[in-house]
Length: 83
Image (cartoon, rainbow, N blue to C red; front, side, top):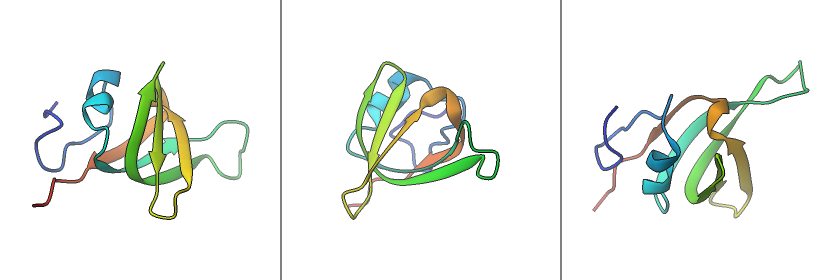
């Protein structure tokens, strides 16, 4: 798996350490939802705010927070650092 500082880091199967290294970075993630057969997944696009106990918190540009378990990640990537 690429390291978090490489452009376009894929997040499927990423470890908690990988997500912790992405705190403050923009990511896009699709993750499984449970107990809703009509909506089996959701998306989070925004900045990684925190990672603890296998759960990632992402804040979008409107300030809304999404929480998801690392084990529920279906697909995702870290955006390159622009600068």
